[in-house]
Amino acid sequence: MSAPARPRVRVAWGTWLLALPVPVLGLLLWHAGVQGAWVLPFGIQMTFLPEPADVGLRLVDLAVGGVYDDSFSGTLWTHLGASAVRVLQGFLLAVVVAVPLGVLMGRSRLVFRMLDPTVNLVRPNPVTAWAPLTLLIIGFGDRSTVFLVFLAAVFPILLNTISGVRQVSGRLLEAASMLGTPPAQALYKVVIPAATPSIVGGMRIAMGLAWVILVVGETVGIDTGLGAMITQAREQSRTDLIIVGMIVIGLAGFAADRLLGLVFRVLFGRRPILR
Amino acid sequence: MVKIGRIRENLPADIVMKGLGKQYPGTAQAAVEGVDVTVAAGEVLCIVGASGCGKSTVLRMVAGFEEVTSGTLSVATEPVSGPGPDRGVVFQDYGLFPWLTVAENIAYGPRQARLQRPVVAERTEQALEAVGLTRVSGSFPHQLSGGMQQRVAIARVLANKPSVLLMDEPFGALDALTRVEMQHELQRIQRAAGITVLFVTHSIEEAVYLGDRVMVMAGGTAHGMPGHVREIVDVDLPVDRDASSPEFNAIERHVDGLVHAGHAVRS
Image 1 (cartoon, rainbow over the protein chains, first blue to last red):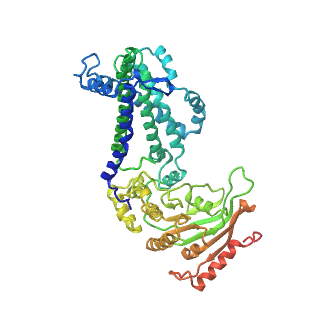
Image 2: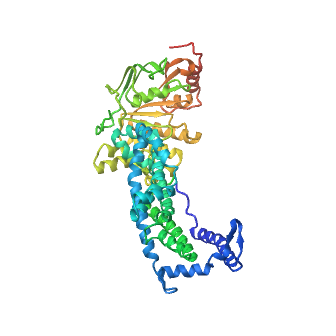
Image 3: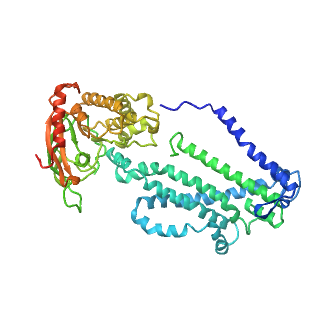
């Protein structure tokens, strides 16, 4: 009894057509604003902004070189690669710590009551506030960034895992036990599959936050990475590079989310993992 | 304690309750007390009564989800010590595993019992056919209607060749038409397998339609007394019943009277 397939091509066209006007208008206004030296609310002086065309050129140069031939030309992939590796390391570390811990806290009232107050104390602290301390205690380099990414990613995964595990319907556990499942097996046969949609949701949020924290994490003592690139650009007041960096980080975050979705598709096939 | 791996052949079992009672710790009075009944092998016993009278508690004790606190309870002469596939339970909210397909849900029990793969496949096939869902074996529960999900739940239980079928208001969440359809389905399945059924329901008509006997319960904490059996009514009607016949209605009225009688009356 499945729903009839929607006409996908028609929907895609409609979405594109509706999606285009706003960004195109935005670009036109941006160009006009820089040309005309507009001053926007908040005291934004548009003269200091590069024109959209300049940003586009810089993006191309960064990716494949040949436009400006400076120290940044063609370095996009190096920076992107370095950042991606750090995000991946921090994210995976967060998964390895948060999922088992979340399952434990979700299942055991005792463990939950022991750890939850501490978790709630640490969590609201913005990861950005951890950056200065991290740089001092870990030092410059990769590990600081990975640690910050880890911090950013661990809480959404932990909290979503705990919530997913706690919300597993008692009915499912009764059914499993009626069907001959010993309590020890119920954890991986029922609880974890039932909690998976929540855990996956937590991971997607965590992946997004990981990319966001990158700029903060890669500010000092690192010379490759998108955040590092933006910091260098800022020191040289190269606004076009800064904007390109922002665009690339945004796109990378988007791509990472899609890739994560793909990984889950491969792992779970057609199984319902979205609530 | 769960009996793993002991899948007997489909031998219907009897259920013997003697002075069966349940009192939760820290409560002043029992939730259920003094239930005396022997459900014969292959019999369909319907338990009917107002909310809170303890009918689900009785079923859950037979299922092994609740521990017996007084009296005795045995299925096929063995005392009940925990849930198991020999006493399959069908819940009102289905209890299907949403991450498994229909076929995987049904195969769960046989797989859990470590049966050989061809046997698992055969049992799944048979159960699917028994409930008429062969065509949706690859679908997920959320893609099915309520009636179909309940049929999957029944198939999932049948795949283990249970001795007893325990049904806790199984058709309560279904619309009236599907409900009638499912009652016929259940009759068909029960007659084919000759399985013992304990069926809890709010609906007096349903109880009289399906049951060989109807056990009327009353009381409950809301009424200030333990849940107890008021009377067990023999449903002396032919196998294919006409719900509009005078004989049917007479029994229905009798049961109705028992359900709604004043609470000073105790059997």
